[in-house]
Length: 394
Image (tube, rainbow, N blue to C red; front, side):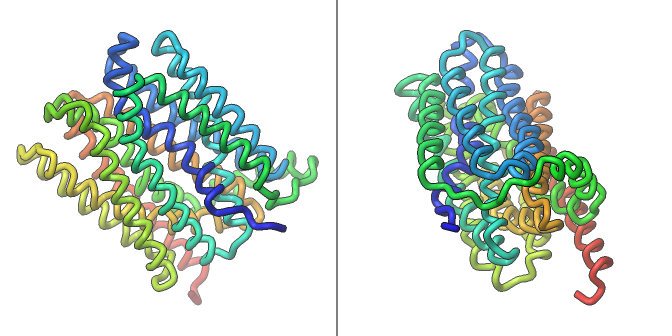
């Protein structure tokens, strides 16, 4: 079997999150154009993340049942079509629906990209390849706010969705021509009888739950800050609109740097501890952010320095937690990948929805990050304790 090109797996994986990050700088402009409130525009973000979460529950077992390639291609068709619909919407309610459909298509790449990597590599090598993917994937979302800001300011906010629809078509063509199948489809009877059992085994596994919940809290909790950033910098700090896309890009540059570090650290350090140590760095950074805001030091450096460090911790923790979670049961990698993705995006959706409810976006985002960090540390330690109990000789 010909190995899937890593660049193609990266392209289809980052497309799902790119569609979220690229729209952030255009939120204020789109709100004015559609005569929508801040809460409604935040809902376009929250619904997108929820779509990413719930869609992954379906794509995991579907890819185990029918194979990775056909399920991925179906998702890419939906992604492209929904992007076109979002570009043509007449009101915010239609935009919310189009964003949900776009997310349901985009999450195919998130699940199946991870599953293909794990199909074709042992856990240690899979973690290294996922770190490389994270490194490459972070380049896209890191540049996405800048691209989104440039598109919105020069061509209008609708041009963002035309560009995403075109990306979906490009991904579809490349996948059709270059992507091999990495898993033979399961037998229908076997698939129907085992789906609930597979999810049930994962849901009662403390190790899987610890890494899944911890991974979400360590990574996608930052969506609270990214979603609130236009309102923090434009409304609270009165920065010009063209700067708004720069600040999320700086945070995601920290994720990129953390992913670089992860590719070096994974061969040298115990992978089951790496997520804990990396998340601890993010927890310290979130407490520093909260302390500065409570002390009245609301400024660009006081916000961006701790958020950059937070992103570094997330970049290291992500591939370690992800690999540990989806390796719990090698027979159901697709289902584990989908359930892990659901937990990640579920955490992100909750955090994004909560930050939209506060009257002080900076303070609310900081509180959310601190809370998520503490929960993440607890979950990771639970996973480690269970693994040590299950494997006393390790």
